[in-house]
Length: 427
Image 1 (cartoon, rainbow, N blue to C red):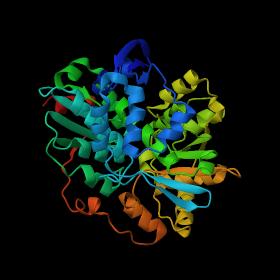
Image 2: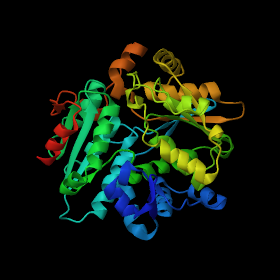
Image 3: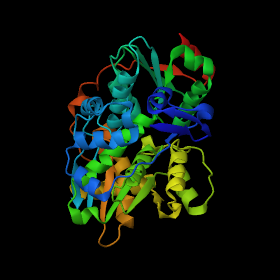
Image 4: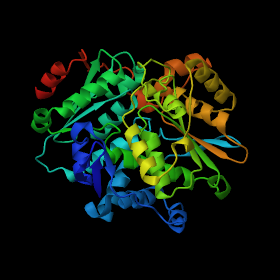
């Protein structure tokens, strides 16, 4: 598999290199040189396979012969050791629940697959430092995926006071090879610090820097697999008229869905659903890319004004000669999010703010005869304070959260200054 840097098409790397490197020069994202496509008969046969077998086939279409089929299947089996069920919400809408992994969020798929790939690719003596920024769920997924791994140091930046207390407990109580830093700023500041670190060539080489953000190609490709898993669970008549609504912050999840469509998965259209940080909906409506200052919302994992993965979306539309006008979109404010969560509860489905936004856009835009699927990206209990307050009911705490709820936080605190972060990384 060859990938090229979106900011310098002359920089081309293998899959292994892209996984280890994370970003290309000028902070450019890597993108596949080839865009494989399955025949319709292949897709039908794949939808009959089990999750692991099918996912291995999907990933090998991208990765090629860099990893043997047997090794890849073993790694996928280790990574995807939990289900992604489609749960009915109403007659024409269902939720793809992606929160049944160890940290109760969709990031478990990408984080664990990336950890498996790095373990396979890296030599036993090679020191790696994973540096990543999180708006909530990435931190936990990455921390748990790499926890206890030899020769891997994980440093996670997150915006202090801007993620839910239980999200924080999930990854800031581990210790060992997992170090966490609460940054006095928003998620975009955290992301900027990570990019500055990757621009520092000396730092990169000295500590073997890598990123586990959704910018890493291994995480992105892992996410393609659960879109196929969703369609596999639907009857034929629903597959033919499928609309998928994706709660979008950094836009990795939507990119993965569009890559699934590029492979041949039958999806009629996608909806990019955001909160008040609506850079992409405004761009799709008016053609101007004008990020505003990031605002804090109930759906904090989507509080991103400059989504990292958007250049990949644009590149895919350009390469496939798709029309950007075919991508549906919409933004939902906090009050509408709350009323939507209550509406879902009346339907018998307990949801958290991110999924509620995706449901709302789907409900508002679904046409007669279509079937809608929205992504449930995190367990409602990860946002227990807001969910219980909005729905006025108590939620049981899953054991994954209950085990960590009373543990002390081990985080460092830091101003959003690169010099300070650099010194910390070199210590």
